[in-house]
Image (tube, rainbow, N blue to C red):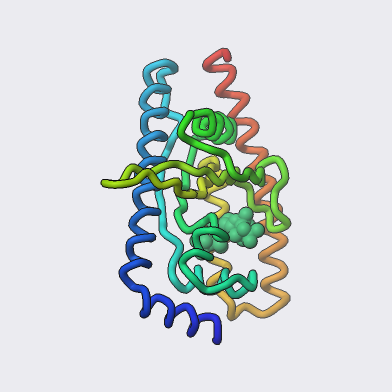
Amino acid sequence: MAGIDEFEAMIERDEAAFRQLMTYYECAIMEIKTKLQVFDAEFQLRHDRNPIESICWRLKSPESIAEKLQRKDLPVSLESIERNLFDIAGVRVVCALPEDAYSLARSLVVQDDVTLIDRRDYIASPKQSGYRSLHIIVEIPIFLEREKRPMKVEVQLRSIAQNFWASLDHQLQYKKDLDAEEEASIIAELKELSDAAAALDERMQAIRHRIFRD
Ligand code: 0O2
Protein backbone atom coordinates (compact mmCIF):
# COMPACT_ATOMS: atom_id res chain seq x y z
CA MET A 1 0.00 0.00 0.00
CA ALA A 2 1.63 3.23 -1.20
CA GLY A 3 0.30 5.32 1.71
CA ILE A 4 1.66 2.94 4.35
CA ASP A 5 5.07 2.80 2.64
CA GLU A 6 5.21 6.57 2.47
CA PHE A 7 4.24 6.80 6.13
CA GLU A 8 6.88 4.25 7.17
CA ALA A 9 9.52 6.13 5.19
CA MET A 10 8.49 9.37 6.90
CA ILE A 11 8.83 7.79 10.36
CA GLU A 12 12.19 6.30 9.47
CA ARG A 13 13.43 9.72 8.33
CA ASP A 14 12.06 11.52 11.31
CA GLU A 15 11.82 8.93 14.07
CA ALA A 16 12.92 11.22 16.89
CA ALA A 17 10.46 13.93 15.88
CA PHE A 18 7.63 11.37 15.58
CA ARG A 19 8.41 10.00 19.06
CA GLN A 20 8.52 13.53 20.44
CA LEU A 21 5.12 14.36 18.96
CA MET A 22 3.61 11.16 20.39
CA THR A 23 5.07 12.03 23.81
CA TYR A 24 3.43 15.47 23.62
CA TYR A 25 0.09 13.78 22.91
CA GLU A 26 0.67 11.51 25.88
CA CYS A 27 1.29 14.56 28.08
CA ALA A 28 -1.99 16.09 26.88
CA ILE A 29 -3.76 12.85 27.79
CA MET A 30 -2.28 13.09 31.31
CA GLU A 31 -3.63 16.64 31.67
CA ILE A 32 -7.13 15.56 30.63
CA LYS A 33 -7.06 12.49 32.88
CA THR A 34 -6.06 14.59 35.88
CA LYS A 35 -8.90 17.04 35.27
CA LEU A 36 -11.40 14.19 35.03
CA GLN A 37 -10.10 12.59 38.21
CA VAL A 38 -10.44 15.92 40.01
CA PHE A 39 -14.09 16.22 38.86
CA ASP A 40 -14.76 12.70 40.05
CA ALA A 41 -13.26 13.36 43.50
CA GLU A 42 -15.15 16.64 43.85
CA PHE A 43 -18.41 15.03 42.76
CA GLN A 44 -17.93 12.29 45.34
CA LEU A 45 -17.54 14.95 48.04
CA ARG A 46 -20.60 16.92 46.97
CA HIS A 47 -22.99 14.19 45.91
CA ASP A 48 -21.69 11.05 47.58
CA ARG A 49 -21.30 9.10 44.37
CA ASN A 50 -18.75 8.78 41.56
CA PRO A 51 -19.84 9.60 38.00
CA ILE A 52 -16.75 7.94 36.47
CA GLU A 53 -16.51 4.17 36.30
CA SER A 54 -13.21 4.03 34.44
CA ILE A 55 -10.88 6.05 32.26
CA CYS A 56 -8.66 4.53 29.63
CA TRP A 57 -6.58 6.06 26.93
CA ARG A 58 -4.68 5.23 23.79
CA LEU A 59 -2.41 6.81 21.23
CA LYS A 60 -3.59 6.10 17.70
CA SER A 61 -1.42 3.34 16.24
CA PRO A 62 0.97 4.22 13.40
CA GLU A 63 -1.01 1.85 11.10
CA SER A 64 -4.25 3.61 11.97
CA ILE A 65 -2.66 7.05 11.44
CA ALA A 66 -1.31 5.97 8.04
CA GLU A 67 -4.71 4.52 7.04
CA LYS A 68 -6.56 7.70 8.02
CA LEU A 69 -4.11 9.99 6.19
CA GLN A 70 -4.53 7.86 3.10
CA ARG A 71 -8.33 7.59 3.38
CA LYS A 72 -8.64 11.35 3.68
CA ASP A 73 -6.04 11.96 1.00
CA LEU A 74 -3.91 14.05 3.36
CA PRO A 75 -0.20 14.80 3.08
CA VAL A 76 2.04 12.34 4.90
CA SER A 77 4.03 14.49 7.32
CA LEU A 78 4.18 15.27 11.02
CA GLU A 79 2.70 18.73 10.37
CA SER A 80 -0.19 17.15 8.52
CA ILE A 81 -0.85 14.70 11.37
CA GLU A 82 -0.98 17.53 13.87
CA ARG A 83 -3.03 19.85 11.70
CA ASN A 84 -5.53 17.35 10.33
CA LEU A 85 -5.97 14.40 12.69
CA PHE A 86 -7.64 15.24 15.98
CA ASP A 87 -7.87 11.74 17.41
CA ILE A 88 -4.20 10.85 17.83
CA ALA A 89 -4.65 11.18 21.58
CA GLY A 90 -7.82 9.45 22.76
CA VAL A 91 -9.33 9.26 26.22
CA ARG A 92 -12.36 7.08 26.89
CA VAL A 93 -14.44 7.87 29.93
CA VAL A 94 -16.95 5.25 30.97
CA CYS A 95 -19.56 6.91 33.14
CA ALA A 96 -22.29 5.36 35.21
CA LEU A 97 -25.11 6.79 33.06
CA PRO A 98 -25.47 8.95 29.91
CA GLU A 99 -26.32 12.10 31.90
CA ASP A 100 -22.91 11.77 33.60
CA ALA A 101 -21.27 11.80 30.17
CA TYR A 102 -22.94 15.12 29.37
CA SER A 103 -22.15 16.68 32.72
CA LEU A 104 -18.47 15.61 32.65
CA ALA A 105 -18.08 16.93 29.10
CA ARG A 106 -19.59 20.25 30.20
CA SER A 107 -17.28 20.47 33.21
CA LEU A 108 -14.28 19.84 30.98
CA VAL A 109 -15.04 22.37 28.26
CA VAL A 110 -15.77 25.23 30.67
CA GLN A 111 -12.27 25.03 32.15
CA ASP A 112 -10.37 28.15 31.11
CA ASP A 113 -7.40 26.27 29.66
CA VAL A 114 -9.59 23.92 27.61
CA THR A 115 -10.93 24.86 24.18
CA LEU A 116 -13.72 22.91 22.53
CA ILE A 117 -12.82 22.20 18.91
CA ASP A 118 -15.57 19.77 17.90
CA ARG A 119 -18.47 17.91 19.47
CA ARG A 120 -20.28 14.89 18.06
CA ASP A 121 -23.24 13.69 20.01
CA TYR A 122 -23.79 10.08 19.03
CA ILE A 123 -25.95 9.65 22.14
CA ALA A 124 -28.62 12.04 20.88
CA SER A 125 -28.02 10.91 17.28
CA PRO A 126 -26.68 7.34 17.32
CA LYS A 127 -24.68 6.07 14.36
CA GLN A 128 -26.32 3.75 11.84
CA SER A 129 -24.63 0.82 13.62
CA GLY A 130 -26.30 1.73 16.92
CA TYR A 131 -23.08 3.22 18.34
CA ARG A 132 -23.81 5.71 21.12
CA SER A 133 -21.18 7.94 22.68
CA LEU A 134 -20.43 11.61 23.17
CA HIS A 135 -17.23 12.64 21.38
CA ILE A 136 -15.52 15.92 22.03
CA ILE A 137 -12.27 17.19 20.61
CA VAL A 138 -10.56 19.58 22.98
CA GLU A 139 -7.37 21.54 22.87
CA ILE A 140 -5.33 21.75 26.06
CA PRO A 141 -1.89 23.26 26.67
CA ILE A 142 1.00 21.14 27.86
CA PHE A 143 3.78 22.92 29.71
CA LEU A 144 7.21 21.92 28.45
CA GLU A 145 10.58 23.11 29.67
CA ARG A 146 10.74 25.98 27.20
CA GLU A 147 7.29 26.31 25.72
CA LYS A 148 3.58 25.96 26.22
CA ARG A 149 2.10 23.83 23.47
CA PRO A 150 -1.59 23.41 22.64
CA MET A 151 -2.49 19.78 21.87
CA LYS A 152 -5.70 18.17 20.70
CA VAL A 153 -7.31 15.23 22.46
CA GLU A 154 -10.42 13.27 21.53
CA VAL A 155 -12.50 12.43 24.58
CA GLN A 156 -15.17 9.75 24.18
CA LEU A 157 -17.71 9.68 27.00
CA ARG A 158 -20.35 7.00 27.37
CA SER A 159 -22.33 5.00 29.87
CA ILE A 160 -21.48 1.51 31.13
CA ALA A 161 -24.28 0.08 28.97
CA GLN A 162 -23.11 2.01 25.89
CA ASN A 163 -19.55 0.84 26.51
CA PHE A 164 -20.64 -2.79 26.93
CA TRP A 165 -22.37 -2.56 23.55
CA ALA A 166 -19.44 -0.77 21.83
CA SER A 167 -16.90 -3.35 23.08
CA LEU A 168 -18.84 -6.25 21.59
CA ASP A 169 -19.56 -4.34 18.39
CA HIS A 170 -15.83 -3.60 18.09
CA GLN A 171 -15.08 -7.35 18.20
CA LEU A 172 -17.29 -7.85 15.15
CA GLN A 173 -15.07 -5.49 13.18
CA TYR A 174 -12.17 -7.91 13.64
CA LYS A 175 -14.22 -10.90 12.56
CA LYS A 176 -14.27 -10.49 8.84
CA ASP A 177 -14.70 -14.17 7.90
CA LEU A 178 -18.47 -14.25 8.51
CA ASP A 179 -20.70 -14.85 5.52
CA ALA A 180 -22.71 -11.83 4.34
CA GLU A 181 -26.08 -13.10 5.55
CA GLU A 182 -24.82 -13.94 9.03
CA GLU A 183 -23.03 -10.60 9.25
CA ALA A 184 -26.20 -8.68 8.26
CA SER A 185 -28.21 -10.59 10.84
CA ILE A 186 -25.67 -9.83 13.59
CA ILE A 187 -25.58 -6.15 12.62
CA ALA A 188 -29.40 -5.96 12.82
CA GLU A 189 -29.41 -7.67 16.20
CA LEU A 190 -26.67 -5.41 17.52
CA LYS A 191 -28.74 -2.39 16.48
CA GLU A 192 -31.70 -3.77 18.45
CA LEU A 193 -29.48 -4.42 21.45
CA SER A 194 -28.21 -0.85 21.29
CA ASP A 195 -31.81 0.36 21.59
CA ALA A 196 -32.36 -2.06 24.47
CA ALA A 197 -29.25 -0.71 26.22
CA ALA A 198 -30.56 2.85 25.74
CA ALA A 199 -33.90 1.86 27.29
CA LEU A 200 -32.04 0.30 30.22
CA ASP A 201 -30.01 3.49 30.70
CA GLU A 202 -33.19 5.55 30.74
CA ARG A 203 -34.84 3.39 33.38
CA MET A 204 -31.67 3.38 35.49
CA GLN A 205 -31.49 7.15 35.23
CA ALA A 206 -35.11 7.43 36.38
CA ILE A 207 -34.33 5.22 39.38
CA ARG A 208 -31.31 7.33 40.22
CA HIS A 209 -33.46 10.47 40.21
CA ARG A 210 -35.90 8.77 42.58
CA ILE A 211 -33.09 7.73 44.92
CA PHE A 212 -31.24 11.05 44.93
CA ARG A 213 -34.39 13.17 44.47
CA ASP A 214 -32.61 15.44 42.00
P1 0O2 B 1 -8.91 4.08 16.36
O1 0O2 B 1 -8.72 3.72 17.79
O2 0O2 B 1 -8.82 5.56 16.15
O3 0O2 B 1 -8.07 3.30 15.41
P2 0O2 B 1 -13.87 11.40 10.88
O4 0O2 B 1 -13.03 10.98 9.73
O5 0O2 B 1 -13.07 12.05 11.98
O6 0O2 B 1 -15.11 12.12 10.48
P3 0O2 B 1 -13.85 9.09 12.46
O7 0O2 B 1 -12.45 9.34 12.81
O8 0O2 B 1 -14.20 7.68 12.03
O9 0O2 B 1 -14.40 10.02 11.35
O10 0O2 B 1 -14.71 9.62 13.68
P4 0O2 B 1 -15.95 9.08 14.47
O11 0O2 B 1 -16.75 8.12 13.66
O12 0O2 B 1 -16.63 10.26 15.06
O13 0O2 B 1 -15.27 8.30 15.67
C1 0O2 B 1 -14.34 7.29 15.47
C2 0O2 B 1 -14.17 6.47 16.73
O14 0O2 B 1 -15.45 6.26 17.36
C3 0O2 B 1 -13.70 5.08 16.38
O15 0O2 B 1 -12.32 5.06 16.42
C4 0O2 B 1 -14.31 4.22 17.48
O16 0O2 B 1 -13.55 4.32 18.66
C5 0O2 B 1 -15.63 4.90 17.72
N1 0O2 B 1 -16.71 4.39 16.84
C6 0O2 B 1 -17.33 5.07 15.83
N2 0O2 B 1 -18.29 4.32 15.28
C7 0O2 B 1 -18.31 3.14 15.94
C8 0O2 B 1 -19.11 1.95 15.84
O17 0O2 B 1 -20.02 1.81 15.01
N3 0O2 B 1 -18.82 0.95 16.73
C9 0O2 B 1 -17.84 1.05 17.66
N4 0O2 B 1 -17.62 0.02 18.48
N5 0O2 B 1 -17.05 2.17 17.77
C10 0O2 B 1 -17.28 3.19 16.94
P5 0O2 B 1 -11.50 4.29 15.27
O18 0O2 B 1 -11.07 5.31 14.31
O19 0O2 B 1 -12.30 3.15 14.74
O20 0O2 B 1 -10.36 3.61 16.05
